[in-house]
Length: 205
Image 1 (cartoon, rainbow, N blue to C red):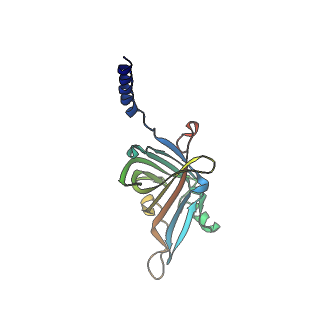
Image 2 (image 1 turned 90 degrees about the vertical axis):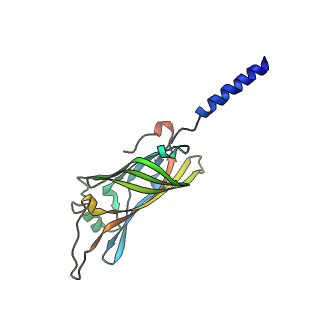
Image 3 (image 1 turned 135 degrees about the horizontal axis):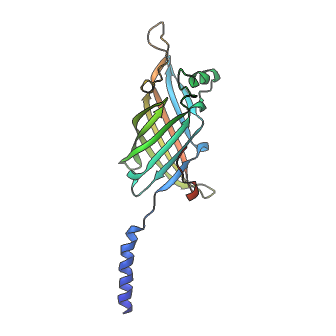
């Protein structure tokens, strides 16, 4: 009888175990250890810049990464190119028009695994009041615990967009032909994210 009871218990455990899996984890962007930067052609060179204020949430399921999701928001007024006059112009209606369009956002709609630790994240990207679907190539850099026991993960993404697609068209013609500014914007995103406690697991604002 004991053997029968033990066998029955093992059978029930075998049925139950597959239903016990690690749930998707929520991670919040650690702004102090992350960067959102860009480069734009100016005359003969490329001018770098960054946004200093942003937030985001990543929900990642290692067992089913295709069900993961991303929400990200950038405060447009936080643009920083290390030149006050230029930054003021970029905040104006000639470019980002930050009073009218204070945020740049991305919200994923699909995640596709393309290689180990590499994904194509499709989503709605909104800038300057225009929303378009883009595909971000994302690299997962792994997960580790910091010296204080917090679980951290890393992600990196690079892409190129055309600013004219989003209604940012300001430029100046050159006497020698061509224009002062390029249309393509190179974007690089490097994120360190922290695993949220249940009370902290909330979407980006």
